[in-house]
Amino acid sequence: MRLVLILLCACAEKPAEKIDDGWLIAEEDLGDDLAVGEGFSPANGSELYAALEQVLPGLVYTTPMTEVPLSLWELAQNDNIADMGSCPYSQADGDAILWKTGGCRSRGGYNWSGELAEITHARDPDTGFQGYGWDLDLRIEGDVESRSFDALWLQGALRFTLGDEDTLDRAAQVNAIAGVQGYWERISVADPRAVYWDAWAITGRMETLTGGATRIEARVDLGAAGGFEVSADALALEADCPAEPDGDVTLETGEHTLVVQFDGASACDRCADYSVDGAFAGRACGT
Image (cartoon, rainbow, N blue to C red):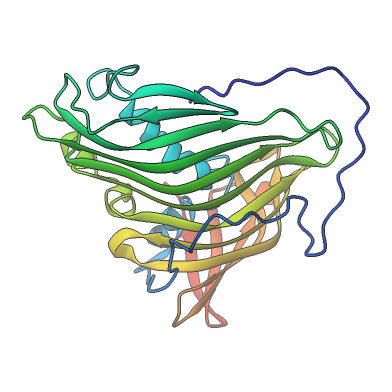
């Protein structure tokens, strides 16, 4: 996904200030919550780590809250799936580009319904922040023998803020459902995302400050694997170990409390100790 940045004059900017609840970006009303966030019960540490990759920055994705649904939007734009410009077609609307379908069928054999809006705001002259957004109401179904997937859908809203050099690195607020069915089977890859992305949903927010300090609060649903509430107040993303943060992450599943203790650059081994209801349960490691 290419983001077009709007370049403005190098005007003086005043530092952003935290609002009453400690966040730099005020919470936006993105509609009724789409994620439930309960029922997750990992069989082992590997399953726990794979689930955390879907929501925590610094494990696989930089900002998974937005990157997961936008990766599916990018997949949908492949030439064999979309006829960009006609199915779907674009329409300018203020700060937004609307991708409309009108119930079209692409030449590749995919039926499109709904629409998607891509929003680019001008950089805020006071804070230096720049906002982007995506409003999602899109479904695509393939019915030809050589199709890449059976169905792909995106619903809800994504908000992403690109920060300045002094206070905020990036922030996201998301209330969205994303899914793809029949994709992983066709590329013959054994991947936990075959389950997670069957019905992936997040309702929540995250902010990473300049220097890497990260806060996250979200409810997450990962298909048949269930869901959880995830929170971290002082997770550190370190340049010396970009693939593993430092700090504690808490998961509430509705029945149990899991605490995952990442140790960042001190080990940088893509592994973390974790406990269940206060008792040590083992090591969670990525592949």
